[in-house]
Length: 505
Image (cartoon, rainbow, N blue to C red; front, side, top):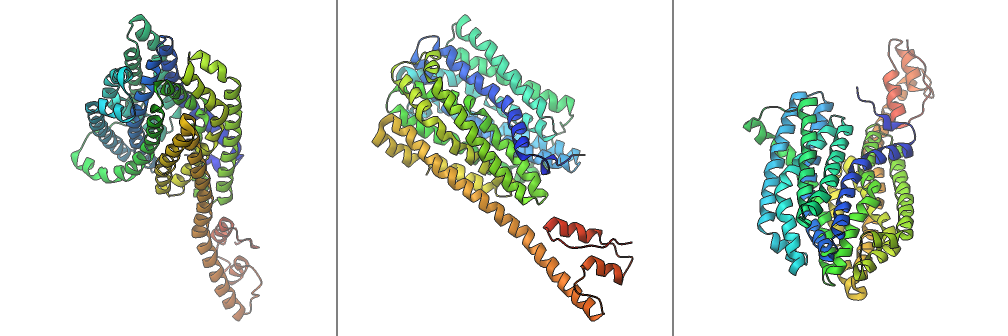
């Protein structure tokens, strides 16, 4: 039987344990992406790093759709498992996988047909665009594979097998790290070799996750078209907002990439390194949103609203301390980072500027992650979508545009930081206010109802000669010794009404 372990004990400890565990699997894939840039930088062509930067922007968009679909699968399967409806869980898993396959095939085909146009849209030109096109021609067709792998990993977490889900990503990262240098250097395939290694890694993640779902947990059922049509509504009810929320981030990233591209490929090469360095450096913060969600959810379910607030506060404090510490580390090692990736000129200057002045502002992206997690677990997932889309559009486009006009390429980064400050602070304020509104909506009506019942009951007892000052449970015991007061005590304790009680017989 599942135990709600987050409703007691140190919330900060829960946050640390959950975040660090989740960060392992996430960081493995981020580190591999960073290794791609490192190995390609050894070839001495800065256009290669820029090409990966452009290609990564488009690849990020496609995989974000898969993330949204995997969120829906995880939510639906976990609910069925929790309700001990195994057959329904199998049905929803299979139908969600079919939706994921169809959606990813459609997206992969659409993107593949317009790769040159999409690269042009984000600012890639000349040889850099050709290199990025070669990379995407290999990587994009494997999109259904990684989308299914993410969905299966979500299914593993839904049944409580987070360890195997983490192991699948670690194995994928290991495969990529091994085959990267083989295809890039031994077979002299360059950037296309990096793409082949990534496809092999996606196969590995899919194989491990699929074996876990099908063999270990026996969660694969038979397809039924009537059930599939029936399940489309609940699947898209969650997948729709989730996809929109996750797609917002790469759209914002594409806006920044396009703005930087106006200043030359050398800056884009530096931005490509930063695009891989940021998730590795702040992987714990990316994991934080997934870690704080269950903590908020369990305490909300237990009506422990003070602990819900404390969860938000502790998560924000942890985010601030962690980002400040990592930002200091990036500042102290900024020259070494430039040297390791063999960045020169404008590319080196952009990395140095970020590590010196911009990295610390990731605090505000982090606290927005925390706010979004609270929205999702307090029944307001649309708030999360609103803030993510808002940050990617209103919080990015005008700030980046005017930042570029007033401060050049460095103004682009500063503008993005200002937008994150605005939406981060606003998101946290709304999150705290939402907790108060939910508490008022849930607790106050119950308190009012109990108070009314207690007043009416005491008045009746007063008329019959009992003391109206005695507690309702004690009076009930006097009037009817067979009445059990335990239920009343539980309600009173739940809503915080402190009363004296006499034991019933």
